[in-house]
Image (cartoon, rainbow, N blue to C red; front, side, top):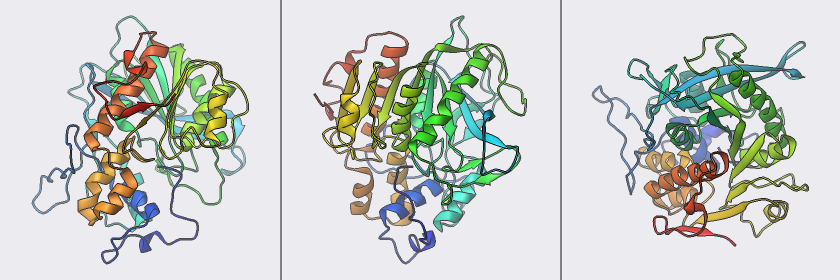
Length: 411
C-alpha cells in the first residue's frame, strides 16, 4: 500500500458502509486491499469480475497475465536474522521475515497456483476494512507453488521487492510475475510490523500502530535477504524451518547480479539499501518520497518513476542530485501514486462492486487506462533490469517511445 493508511484512532468500519459510499482516500485503499481485486490484462476500461462457479456466489477477481516465455513458480520462506534481536517479540527472539521467491519454472501443470494472499491475511484485511467476507474472491496468481526451477546452465539474475507502508508483499505481483516469466529470481519481502502477513505456524500479523517502522527499517531488512540469496546460490536452504525447496532453486540465483525495486516507502528503502550494501547493482523507485533525505552519492544505476513525489520537489530533488551514475526519471500522463502496481487495476475493479463514484476512482488511480498502466509496469522495470543486470541495451530507456506515448522522460 502507499503511505496513506487508516489514521491512528480511526474506526475503519466508518469508512465503508452500505450507506456511505463516498469513501475517504484511506478507506478506499484499505477496502481495495481487503478485496484483493485487479483486472485482466488488455481491458482498456473498467473490468467486470469473473463470475464465481457457484450461482449467486462472490466474483472471482483476476490478475494480469505475465508476457514472458516461461511459466512462473513460487515458494514462501520464513527467514530469521539471528544478528538482529527483536525487542518486540520477547527475550531470545530475532527479526523474522516472510519472503516469497518467484522464478521461471518448468513442468508446472501438477502444481497449484498460488493465491495473491494467504486466506488468513485476507480475512485480516477484510475485518480491518469493515467489508463482508463474501464481497469478492481473491485473485489467483500465475505462480505455481513449488514447481521446479527452469535452469539452462546459467545462474539467474535476482531482484528484491520492498512494499509500501502498511502494505503487503503481493502489492506488485504484476511486476514480479513479469520479471520471473522473463528469467529472473524475484524475492518479495514482508516487512514485519508494517505489513499483513501470515507465518507457517498460523500467526497472522497486521500493521502495528505501536511499533514504528520507517524506510530505514525496511532498508535494514534487505541486506539480510541478500545474505539468504547467497545461501541459495551456495546450495544452502535459508528457510528457518528447513522446509524443502523447489527442485533447482539451490544454486540458481546469481549473487553478482542483484537489483532492488520498491514502491512508496519501499522505494525510499531501495535507495537506502543501495547506500548500505554494494551488492545491489541497480535500484528502481516507484514514486518514493525519499524521506529521510539522501545525503550520500550513489554511483550505480537508479531509475525514478515519479507521480505524487516529483523530482522537482524536495526531498526527491536532493536524492536525484546524489545519483552520480546512470539515472533516469520517467512519468506517465494521467498517473498518480497508486497507478503502478496491482492497486491501479485493483481499485478499478473494486469500484463497481462497492459503488465507488467515477470521481473517487479517478482521484485514487488517475486517468491512465488500466491496460496502459499494466503495460508500462511490465515493460519499464524489465527493460531497466535487463540493461543493468543482464547488460542488454534497452532503447526503451533512451527516450520517448511510440509504443508508450504517455511516458515522458524528465530531463
